[in-house]
Image (cartoon, rainbow, N blue to C red; front, side, top):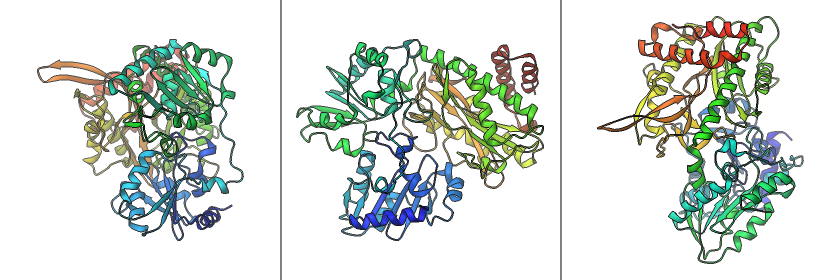
Length: 592
């Protein structure tokens, strides 16, 4: 079916169910950022493949909302579909909830699938529509009714994440969680977010591509810890691990009846943004819901010393793979056919040579020339450029290792570039250095620091429509909260042991895209009469292409930072390279 035919078929079902508007979000039952194919209903109905977006269908309109990372991609993928693009965060475009408020009429019916829709969004919708007398119906997965060749639900195997990597047993973590539950005076902690469950129970899975999590629910009380999961995913080794740590296995579908059976008067802690409304409604009315950010989200964001040691090691291996790739690229572009797709495949080959590599941490963004203006570009056979000895090539990639999750971006100069490209590259680097080299007062959040990366760009009238940095999980999701570096208000303090990316960029549609990304650990710096100050420790190592830099635009301090960083890159990676690669790296990390 063509996209427009799918939408018309959906409208037919809406008429049958007397639904005036239907929301198709980018969610699974656990509000995961990346989805197993089974849950990609928004992709199926719209044709837009970006990871973030919401579609609203009415009798006469179909609209997609997405953020600045995907504007260019969405415009391309929506062509011919009759779906309108509403750009989130841009003046003149209401949010989808505001649009529903302004366009639904008294007595209309709003539909969505409550099994995937988070309770936090339901509450926001109720607030927007409180004066509208609009009925909300959450019992229908209308897209699922139409999707005849829908993929099977994921059935990846579960494996144990060993204590030599985690630094703490699952039993230890559960006891720490119970201590926090006592502080909040709650009887149960209900978990729907897959990364939190995997972290708490020291298990990992293969249900979602690139994200080593298992489709499951968790429930922790003062007396027991439960994992609701399809038993066919659990091996004897995993079953023993769970039993040894006091975790009982229940069937995945049992979660709803178990929650319904909780005794009246109990206090249940949950994160409404990570619990679907279907499960939320199952909690007995006689129980008190205590809402907040998941206890585990805050705990796992601060890495312990064992995790940090392992994570640093993972970045050394990852840096070696990247340098081998860059060397191969430099020696082969122009001498043999290399495309965006084949380059990404070659980079994965180099990563697979590294000990403990499991798979990519996300689909590699390998974008040549103007394709790089799409922040989350994904090459296909139609867009797949062949690389030439000219222009710039952006590669944003990462790996999942038993000892950590990596994410790094380099924009590579393949040959002659324009003065505009060199200026934009240098401004991006200046923003990167300005933030990564910062000393900041304890208590600062990523929102306070975001301007440091944008300042050099703003002085030239440039900006990028995304955040500057995100947290990273530990053999978990490549995007991890609760902290981030972004102009969007975030009240989470940057604490010692948090890992975060720093990745400013310049994106010019039809021209080029530039991003330079490193990963840092938040650490303590100095303490004075003014208070405690923090700093960033860089843990990712890969040369920054000197051919893209207009050295005259760099200050003395910026040159010093780059030279020191490049010396670290050489010192840490060269022992693992052959003579030719080592010689190449020496040249690419020379002092300027």
